[in-house]
Image (tube, rainbow, N blue to C red; front, top):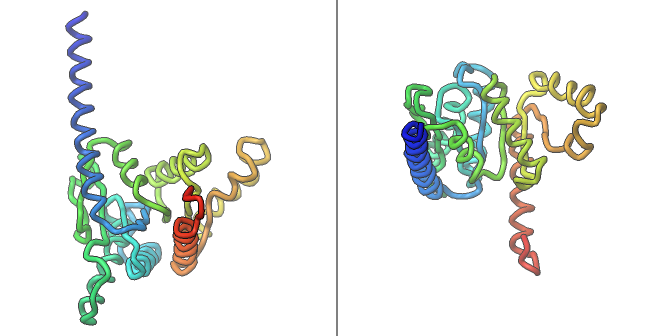
Length: 241
């Protein structure tokens, strides 16, 4: 019995060491990217010619052009579209013979045995984690805003974890933007008609999420938030920002 317990204990220690090493290595690589950074979530099953993918490319390109880094899960679908948009910004900058603001703009944080451990071709830094919780921690750690495109269970999991972190004051109240009102309206309606009236969330919790339709709307929310944050850091007389 004791031998079995010790074997399980050391098996866990080995897993803990590997996970911690991957996290530290991932943090080191992510810190190469300029701030602010935005994480974009969405389905890996979305086709490249989908309107959702088109909007993701457009938004990421706009953000990268204004000094934002783009972080995704590194896979296909929405993730690939967002990474491609960031890279398109670099390509156009070089084609116009302009000096690009940054060389690194597109990061992907993948998962072992997911997407065959291969990132999409537009990822400049591919960081691979062994566990979902570690991957999600890195996707959140260095971002000052989140954009969530239509997706399935994985996307919903990522969305509600971030919402919960904000609700429980484990994270600053950063922008959490849902793209496409038609897709997210049933969720919004369910929250307003079932969750809030039953006292399961507070009135302030309803303001955590913003729902928009266009890349321009999302971009303006993120840019405004970052400009206000920068002003508060720069001009706070007591240095508490």
